[in-house]
Amino acid sequence: MPSPFQSYLTEKSGLKLEEFELLTPSVKTMAVAKGKILLKPGEVCQHSFFVEKGLLRSYTIDEGGKEHIIQFATEEWFISDRSSAYFNEASEFYIEAIEDSEVVLINHDFMVKAGGLNTSFREYNERLLQNHIRHLRKRINLLLGATAEKRYLDFIQLYPDLLLRVPQWMIASYLGITPESLSRVRKELARKNFRN
Amino acid sequence: MPSPFQSYLTEKSGLKLEEFELLTPSVKTMAVAKGKILLKPGEVCQHSFFVEKGLLRSYTIDEGGKEHIIQFATEEWFISDRSSAYFNEASEFYIEAIEDSEVVLINHDFMVKAGGLNTSFREYNERLLQNHIRHLRKRINLLLGATAEKRYLDFIQLYPDLLLRVPQWMIASYLGITPESLSRVRKELARKNFRN
DNA sequence: CGTCGAATTGATGTCATTCAACTACAGTGG
DNA sequence: CCACTGTAGTTGAATGACATCAATTCGACG
Image (tube, rainbow over all chains, first blue to last red; front, side, top):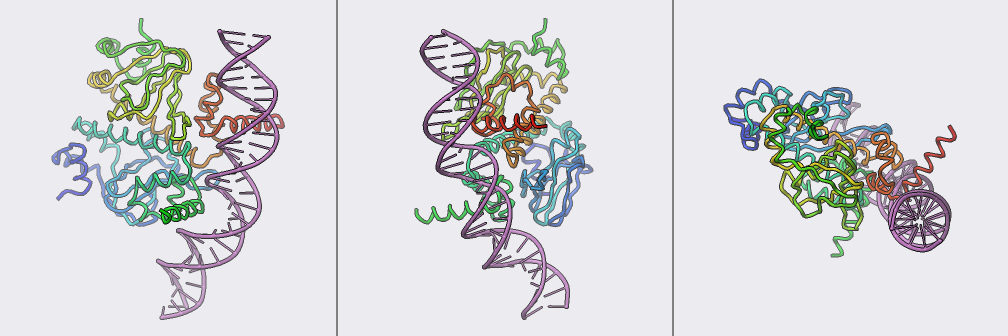
């Protein structure tokens, strides 16, 4: 029976099951415990991680020692340091499990072979990249102008499921504000919603 | 004799001159006067613009009427609303000429045909996307933590040439601060540099 | 020379940070 | 089972960074 990764990929990318068989040597599934770090700054990112179960995050630590969360990844999401992997550079970030998780490791080989098998896989890959760009651009727009409250509202709209699984201070970090500020924003929102 | 676009592309993408000939029907060069708007919110972006000469910018206007500059593009840069073009959505931004410019219009057809001719062109295209992602991510990191001063220092490091060509209030908009704040940041930097 | 937008400067306001104290709660080891 | 410890979250007061508003200067260009 197919793994969640297999099902996901054959559905989304048009990769056929027989084709997938050829790629299995390039794929490993792995259990990672909460708190486990899969990538550290300075390392070259060798894998894309596909989350079958659980929750990961990527983040940087700046000169002042502050964390900035780049991305969360729940079930059926990919997470990696694309730039590090693609350009073979030292990564700037951490990838860490927030919950006990099941993760598929996808290496460069997989991508090359899959792309060779199948033009629809290449198209799928481009769609992923384009989607990523759109997402980053939206986030930039928010950061360039929106107040903490607007950013938070946008977040809960986009990721309602994450609200329940991610500690509040991480959400604050993702939004670029302090946990204290987020706490106050939430308080204020609660107050407003009661008056309506 | 080859156009700047042609030279650039053959050099960077490995597209051959003969191959380029086949694509000429999909390419138009165009002079655009300073202030001319090439894309408006609501339109679907039909072209990527390659700047042969001059300077363009892309920006959004938020609910409060404030501009947020997404990108500048000088000679040998591309600018477009990728997401709008790729996903066939209404664009959210303006693309406008800051100087009198010469621009190459590249339509969807061009990309498909060029990709069909040549795998090295596809690779080039992927490199562009990956590069774009890296760039956006760096900017997010700056916006998530760095002060106005750090952001400005980063900007002049990355785009020293733009400093001379772009009005200051646009740089402020790119950095996500007001023109007044940028003026003060610059004053403060000047003061510091004299004392050393 | 006069006009208009860009840039600077000052006074004041606002939003978010910082630092500190306190509560709530989960996990650990006795 | 309970005390102990550490982490998350909340709240308050003081501070800081940047915004806003208004006035002035600067500079390009007709």
